[in-house]
Every structure is written in C-alpha cells, then in structure tokens.
Image (cartoon, one colour):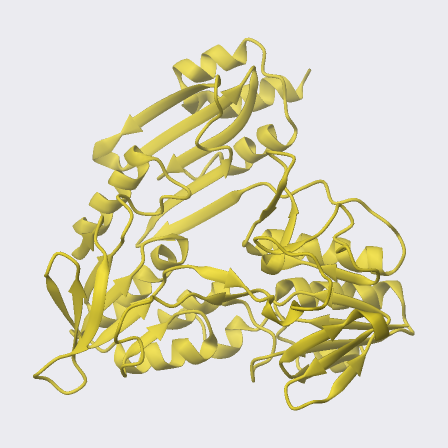
Length: 415
C-alpha cells in the first residue's frame, strides 16, 4: 500500500506518523512545497521575537526522524490530481502514483488588491522565508505598518513591536479580531495595544503603497481617507485562502475548502483531506466549516490516517477555538461565542484591569465563551461546551456571575 500526503504541516506529519504506527510495511511519502523541514507556522512569532531559533519551529526536532520511520519527504508542488489513475502531476511534469491520497495542503496568504504590493519591503508573515525577510528589515526604531488586525495580525503584533519599536496597525473592520471578539472585548484589546505605544487604526482601508520620495527603502501606506503612514517595512496579515486550485478538473468537491465527511474522506474514492484546507464537520452547528487552527489540523490528520488504514473512526466535529496572546494580553473564544437566537448570555467586565468574560447559553447548556485577561478556566469552559453539560440551576448563577464557572463545572461533574 502506498500512501501519499500532500502538505508538510501538522496535519500531514501527524497523518504520516499515524500511518506508520498502523502499518509497518506501507510506503509513505510526504510532499511539501517549501524548501524547509516540516515546521509550524504558529511558531513564527516566537522566531521573530527571539524566543526560539529557526530549528525551534520544526515539528519534529530529532535528527533523522522521518528517515527512522521510513517516511519519505520531498519538495514539490502538485499541479493536478488524476483520480482515475490514482496519480499526481508535479510542477515539471513528474508523476507520483498513490493507493491512498491525503490532501493536507493548508492555506496561503491573501494579497491586498491594491497598487504597490510588489515593492521591496512589503511582505506577508506566513512562511519561514517571510520571517527571514521581516527580521532583516524590522530594525530598532524603524517604522513598521501591519495591515490586518485579525487573528494572525494580532499574533505577530508583539514581535514586530519588539523588533522595530514603531508600529502602526491598519484594520478595515470596525474592530480588531472581529471573528473572535465582540465590541467590548475588541475595544479592550485596542486600548491595551495603544497603551503599548501601538497606533491602531480601525475602520481604515489601504488604497495603495507608494515608494516614498525620500529615505532609502522607505514607503508610504496610503489610506482611503488620504492619510499616509511612513514605513520601512509593511507586513500583510489580511487573511488566508485554502490551497486547492490544483484540484480543478479532479472531480474532488470543494466549497470554502475541500468538502469531507465524518471520515475526513472526500467524494472521490481513496482521497482524503485534513487541516486548514478541509471543510469538515463543525461541533457547534452540525454543518461543515474550515477551522484553520493547529489542534484541528492535528486531529484531522490522525483521524484521516486511521480511515486510510481501514479502521473507520468518526470525526465528531471541530470546536471553534481561538487562544490569542497580543502584546502580553491573553484572549480566548470558544464555540458560539457570539450566541444564538433566543439564547441567553451573561458578562462580567473589569475595564481597568483588562478583564472580561462573556458566557453564551442555549437552554441550560453553555455553547460559547469569550474571555480577555483570564486564562485560569479556559479548559473548564471548553469542557462544559464540548460535553454539552446540562447546568440546571447553575445556568442562572453563571448569568449573574460568570466567574463561578469552575464551581459550576465541579458541581455538575459530580452528578
């Protein structure tokens, strides 16, 4: 049996290791499209701020790890999938045959559709190659403009501030991290960043990036309202899109991502998908969503591999889960953090100390949570949501005081 995995991120690596554990004799090949050992994109901020060296980003740090497991690893870009004859075509024309195929191609950084994206000193922060260029340009006291204050932007914000010292953030939405925070939480996060001398411009759109008339390598980020921000370095964090263009004509069904069922199987026999490219079962809604977070990618990879081995476990669905550290302030959101129609919510706010907790309910079950500056009960809230725990009288107590969530967990665990 020959298993081919396209993609060398967490989903692909975990899948390969799971396949090897389940079949000592199978041929296993990972194909990655970057000239690096398999690494974690989530480690890039720690590389930029000096907490780790480049090899600290690697998913497996033991020398010879893949060779020892007899897992082949090669660089290449897949251009087409021919499901009819179980083969891939790589850039350059080489073909790779498979018996089972896992698509774990992840996502790519989105570009802004404005002039100036090709200027020197304009970079995404998505790959190790991007990180190397950013580290070269983000020198002490240089001006950096970060375009995008979503999840990725807020992760790298502190690293850019540490490297350069002068940072402006431009976000087109009316609030930061709008996909994981309500107005109260986002306003608190903005005030926190501004207290760290970060200029945060929300409801602001970039019109163009222009080469400045003065200053070697300097540029101007031109906003739609006419303002211009001087920048030695511009970093883009405006979103990602799943890597699935190579599937055109393959017959594999796609939507926001590659559509998969509860076995992580696509609609085409012997082809599976996992990680940021897979649109899989969603725990909270019962529908299908792309959940671009590493824990989901890891579990996708494991479940997909077991199904490729013929064990047929079911994937119960991903819980939307975001945990974010922005310049020292930790925030988290889980499940239906924005609530459901007809549901109840309770909140507690401490503006002076940057603390906020909001719980969302459907009936007497906790279905979502949003927290700022509070990390002690993250696991408890996640457990109540994923276990769909009936809270009974504890629901009203939590509506009155959300900080009693640990008491609620203990009380209902003993029932």
